[in-house]
Image 1 (cartoon, rainbow, N blue to C red):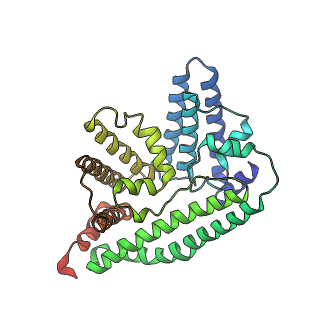
Image 2: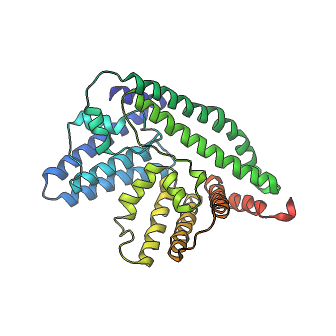
Image 3: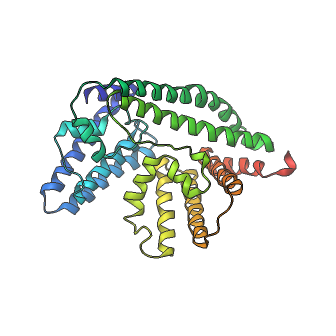
Length: 335
């Protein structure tokens, strides 16, 4: 726990008290949920506190490193305590789970029920796991530093000239950012998984070749898997999931994706990105009801193109910038 707090403080020591306060408050609330007769009150209070802090930090653009991850991680924990599917252990075990340096900054979002038994397990170092961990970490570091960071300068240069791009330059910007984002995020996830293995911990996989997806539904099963599961379990299903008819199912899908957009940032481009993905998912679900299967040679590029256009919205500094790039990407007279 102390090592993880030191690691977190190395970035900015002034945010360490916020992290410690978050851990203490959530542990206190989880204990109150277990022993109190007013369980729902404590659950609502815990969720309100967590998301109020997250919203204020994002709104005033003062964003402590990893705040979205440790907020989601701890919110899931108190919800599971409320449901009775998780049981509070000692404070140090909980703190270890909440602040483990391997995943606190960039995920994946780890499940308490999967991690605590691993933290509690005693044993000698597993040299095979350490070797695997070093290998996975090295791949992740290569993805992040050699690929993502190299491409980032190209992306920044092209997006800064949004209104001047030709057809091919606009597509170069969109494709380059699609690669930068994947290798950046996937690289961080690999490093987290590698660090976990070095310490004898198996963290959840977070990416599974998402750009091979042949549908938007498949994309969200492969992209940021731990976030997708969190959104499904704590937003989509509580809203009613697919249990109350097609109309409400579509509504729930779109609301869940709007929340996903807000998780990434409070801004019009993030909200629009989430809304567009929600609409695409709704269309995909309705298409599946028709039971018409497109050949992969059509469905894969169609999916990838949709994802690329959405990434332009996600990356753009403003809606105007996004529209300029999308306009250039679709201007066949400007080739």
